Image (cartoon, rainbow, N blue to C red; front, side, top):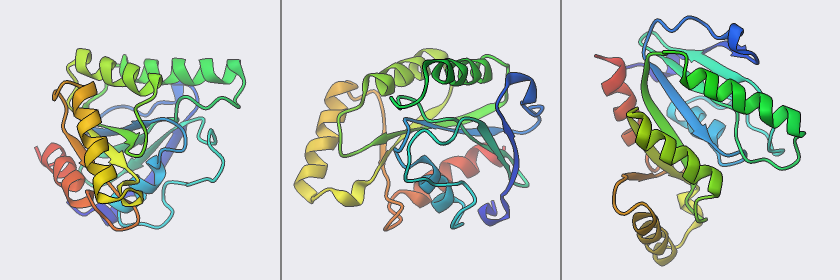
Length: 192
């Protein structure tokens, strides 16, 4: 699969703006400021296709990127406190509506920050994915910011929290760790 041929397709701020689901969709989910846009850009080998921001809570839409074989879906980040309650509700309705809209979801890449224990919102999302039957993988971003022993401790903690049920892909947008593994997962889904 040629990841570099990806291009921005559309942004949906309301459910009636979602494009028709005609190809497998690779969904990227995670809290605000977890490195979602950086992960998408690194996987696509692009500098700024997915917009990154120093200010969390900037993406209030579901952003769609098309490739010749599938579509990448960037969900709004959850858990950011400085957004109005009504905006949080709109995002929640948008994301829930997306997941309940009978889309061709081929894979969900659930993103957590490897440096920290998963937030309550992360746990809710992973619990939803476990019970939904959707195929997913957990990308643990910012792995380059941990020393070897800190990294081993965090991976052990994650395995304890999730009782060894999940596979974690350590990921770094800085040194490229995990990029090929995530690309392989996406390729497997999109080339079916």
